Each structure stands twice: as C-alpha cells, then as structure tokens.
Image (cartoon, rainbow, N blue to C red; front, side, top):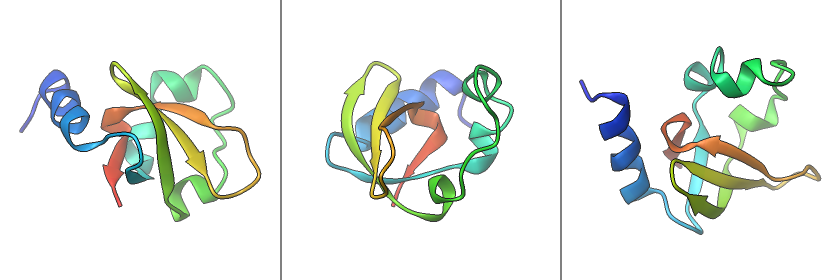
Length: 81
C-alpha cells in the first residue's frame, strides 16, 4: 500500500490541468478540508466529473459543471474520471 506522500506524488503525475476527475468521498470525509468548513458536501461533488483548472503542489483547483465556485482539493482526494 502506498504511503500518503507517494500517493500524492503518483496523483501529481497523473492529474494535470484539463484532466477530468472524480472526488473520492471516503478521502474527503473527515479530512482537514472537511473539518475546516461545512462537512455537508453537495451531491454533485461525488456524482459528477470536474475539470482540473490548475495544480499547485499537492492541490488541484476543480471546476464543476454546475453554477458553483471552483474549489481546491488535495490530489489524493481525486481520481481520474
């Protein structure tokens, strides 16, 4: 099993600007990001694809195809669609 740092390195190599991704619910729930804000995530986050708009270090900026603001999530919370 991969450690967190090697998993993020792997995802950084596969997730780039323009990639379509899906959010991994089990990785997002109970994360630092979930605890820092409202943990009631909208269903579209897990039921639809998002496009990676930018990548900075261990995070990707996601654009969902619904009228909502873009959101930054950790690379290990995503998988290519």
